[in-house]
Image (cartoon, rainbow, N blue to C red):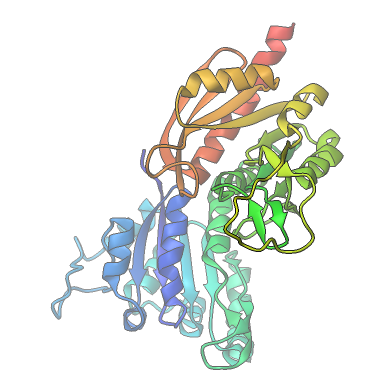
Length: 408
């Protein structure tokens, strides 16, 4: 299934190295990335990097020559590229690029392409703070805003010049998330409140050690981001992960299974849809010691207590909410997912085999089967987790309607 075609324009700034990570983040959200680089960008990062990441030709020249390997198919290829793509993202957008865009100059492929492009434009400025605050840049930004472009203003922090201030390129994940929202613009969840759990929990053994699992939280965060992009109010209850909070989502951070249980139950009545993707520990140490346990030559045993079964309790307490559970299995995938659906009173279980390479825990991709209360099972082939998230959400309104008809 082809991705959403997007132009990634790369300007000549030190932040250009982050654009490679941005290309990867865009692809994880289902984009087909076509990179266009300025001459100055090539001083910071090579076109081969983007070609290898995206699998697409990288354009760096308006005209062929000087041994360039990106010979254009025709003298008006910028027109074809402009028509083929849904979105234009420029990151980093340097002060020079912003000035040329604002004044309509067309002296390389990227600026010529900009004039021919009629779709939405996302500009991500990055530069020295003095350049960002200069009246000329301020004026150019105002011109571009009035033109209807989306501007993701730079972050503050340490800059390459050794100073600290505004001018840092926003994190690639944040740029990619905004790009995804700009092309989807779906509002089918406008009146929904979606409660999502994500990540692992940590159960203390002593003050420095804990029991946990391999969950990265990527699937749960993808679900939260997808629901928010489609208009939902999203409550994300997350165990400890290394992921930025999705834009527009209420994030509640917890550590233990007991904390996640309390957070979920306190917000359950607000939700119309519950998606419990967290990998909650099954056991905890009921009374961990207050001080670090010293290593000795003697064997050491832990007395473990079962944690609350959050999914089962939601299943008992739910009223008209749609409840989606998750099953990470190593064998008997459909059988175990069906057992979980029945025993926990779920409406759908998203099941995946965590034993196969490249999907499941810690991976950027997933391959799942949606086992539904209606008796239907839907296979979602391997794809980025952000794409899988939207495909899971696509099923919720259909499932709700089918269950309503079955009850009547």
